[in-house]
Image 1 (cartoon, rainbow, N blue to C red):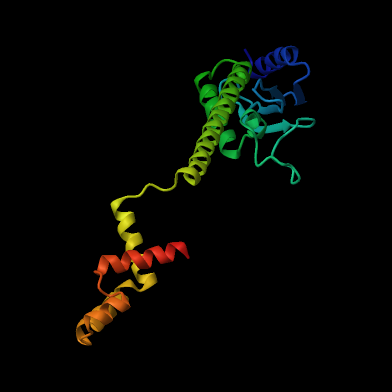
Image 2 (cartoon, one colour; image 1 turned 120 degrees about the horizontal axis):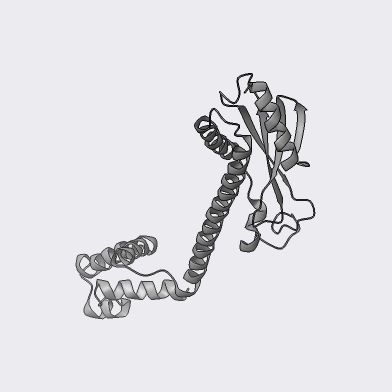
Length: 232
């Protein structure tokens, strides 16, 4: 059959299948608006642009894609500046899923591969059906990823809140570091050295040592200073 005749027959079939979705630009060029079924109130559409080369279907058709969405009238939480919500709710995440440029390229590569596999027969209907399935699967994958990220973030926030009630777990390392910082801050080592200097270098009498409170050891002095620091 003549390629132009095959093209004309396929286009007529497509117009009967997609009476509202197909926009004919010429006998060789048209587009099909594919409405996606998604778990979202936002309406998502993938537009398949097709151009027949003179040799089609003995060669692949020229294909391109674009994505559209319509969220008019859809209530979205977390976008308004005056909203008390800190962000979207888990159940609303589908309203924030969008097809990015990388997603469009991924979808285009898939249907181009299928077009190459169907060289020799009219393939636009098959490509349109596959595109719808692939786009809906991709939307669900993006939504699932967003939900997991949301749950991970929520769990991290809850764990952080729990720290306020349970405090930070004390380890040997954290205790040693805290003790060293406290000694530096309160100059404990200097005071201990001064105490020993007064006790031994100055040859204080036992009565003087008792009156100045220098008879205790280093740990006693450290504990006393630390206690004073805490109460103050």
